[in-house]
Length: 134
Image 1: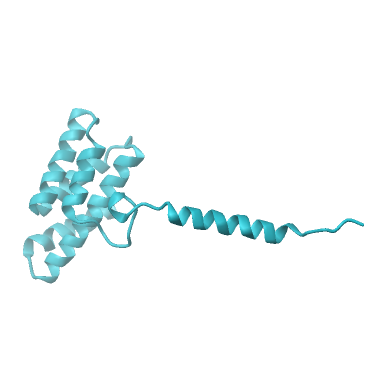
Image 2 (image 1 turned 180 degrees about the vertical axis):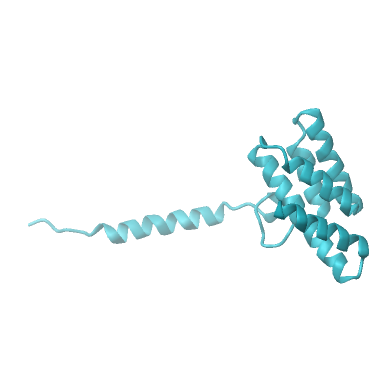
């Protein structure tokens, strides 16, 4: 008589070891994996420049403009440059993620500025919200 061992415990053990292995191999949040909070504008600006380093000149220029605007807190110019980039249909995954991270960083900065009473931040935040509705 053969003994039958159900596959369930073996399958659970494999899944558990796989999950533990993946948890041990994770990267830090500074390396592009979302941490639950928006990136700092300077980090987002660097990611943006890196993602568009090989883009066509006109797109690369928009990314450079957006990056500089993020670094210098030129909110309106950052919104406009990011929207110009997003208007292109052929962004790579890396470029799309860089634009998204930049928008999150910008939005967090704008919200902080609005809460502090900065009228420039309020105007730029309204422009960002309008651009997302389009």
